[in-house]
Every structure is written in C-alpha cells, then in structure tokens.
Amino acid sequence: MKKCGWKLKSFCRKNKVLITSSFLLLIVNGIGYAQDGVAGINEANQKVRSYFDAGTELMYAVGAILGLIGAVKVYQKWNAGDPDTGKVAAAWFGSCVFLVVVATVIKSFFGV
Image (tube, rainbow, N blue to C red; front, side):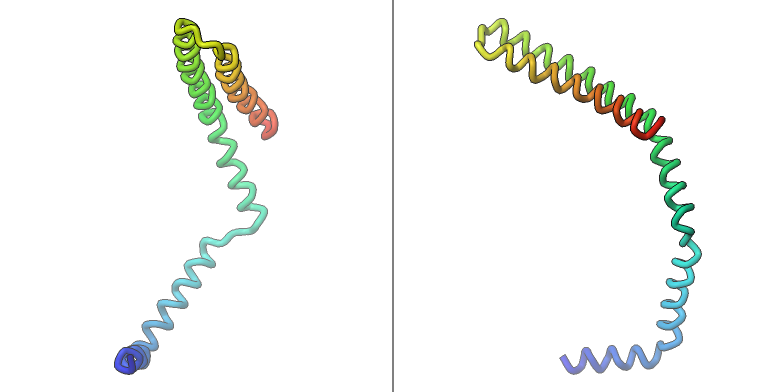
C-alpha cells in the first residue's frame, strides 16, 4: 500500500502542469457549453415540441395495433364461450380509448 501512495505522489509531482492544465481545460470547456437558463429552457421547449407530431402519430399507431390484438383476443374468448368476454372487451377498448385521449390531451396541453 505504501508503494502505491508513493507512486501516486511521484506522478503528481512530475506532472503538476499536465494535471492542472487538463483540469482547467475541462472547466473552460464546460463554461463554453453553458448557456443562460432561459435560453436553455426555450431550446428544450422547442425540441420537445418538434417531437410531438411524431409521438402522437406513434401513439395512434400503437392504439390501432392494440385494438387489433384486443379484437382477436375478444373474438377467441367469445368463440370459446368464456363468461368474462365482456370484461376483456371493455378492458381492451378502454386501453385504446385511453391512448387516443392521452395523445389528444398532451397535444392540447402543450399547444402543439
């Protein structure tokens, strides 16, 4: 253990300039990327709004696929004579309606 500490101290003494300049370069680089808080929030707002159309279309597509899967499952249960077909149909229909409503509410909430 003493040898490791000794090697580290020796390395630090020999490379003080290198370590200091690397640290300062990291700080200066971070300052260069920093921006005003309001500008950062506005940029994030614009980026999020630019993805909304694709996101809502994706939610509608997922809702359509889930609707088809649910329809097949309900049809299978109905043909098998299961007594809980109504509950399963309501659950699948409710999930599809939920996806469509969420997509619409998010669009109206963010004003897109």
